[in-house]
Length: 166
Image (cartoon, rainbow, N blue to C red; front, top):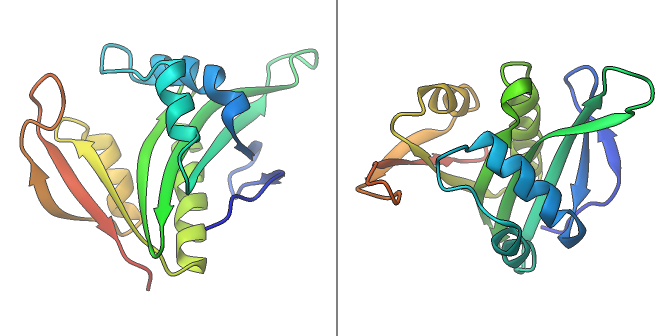
């Protein structure tokens, strides 16, 4: 799947999604740290290495800032990787101040739509304790297909989820 450039409006009002690359590694790291505080956040180097891999796409979600001087403010991201007809959502995060406003839903909808267009199956891991994320993925048709025991550094298990094009 080729990475699309440019900015487009998502289905959720006021959220703009933009494809980003290596130039956004620092920004994505800042957002990752905020979204995953205390839960193995990725640093700029790690994100840069991921973005440099073949088949990786990263999308940044921005919203209008509270003042006209702020312009569009980055609040969330999704990073995925595709190899032939399979994809993996590597990370999806939203800044805590902007959670529960449809941003993760908009990012996920975008990636699922792209996978559907390309007839790609998607996979991802989600922490057992992250019921909100598990519920969101379920709304998009992701199903648990396995459990990865002690997947995370802190020993927590992960659910392996799969979405298949219809």
